[in-house]
Image 1 (tube, rainbow, N blue to C red):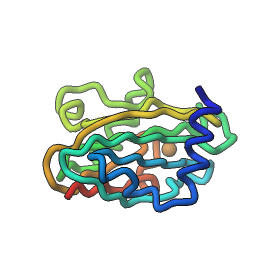
Image 2 (cartoon, helix red, strand yellow):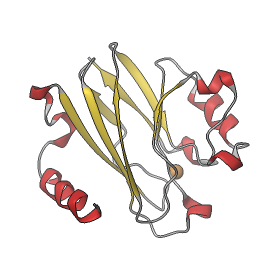
Image 3 (tube, rainbow, N blue to C red):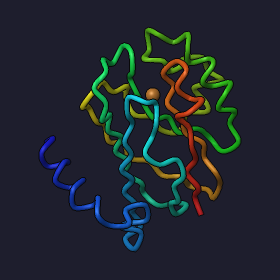
Length: 151
Ligand SMILES: [Cu+2]
């Protein structure tokens, strides 16, 4: 499983991956997160109604408990700061707030990743808009946030 994904990553790495596959109504996004609390890219474009396959890879080396990363996509217009602040208390749920109001904002999420781990999720943004995303590990959203624009 992992070698297969790595191979795919290598194939895609050299091309303009952000919009790859759009011709088939599918988009593949590859995003990395590292030990300096950075996603490798923070702005993405996809087609509204298109199936998006997103892989998040934690390329860092620090332990998960100190530098775990996830990627949570929120509804357009969501308050990232409020969500990220609520997430701090959700230790038992890998920093994903479980209350109804915050759960209602979540469109898609990866699991919380330790060093060398990756997770792939699939989702569809049915309506055009700007969808914020963040890493909800405590304190990370200040740097680790961005947006996916669906057109
Ligand atoms: Cu993070």
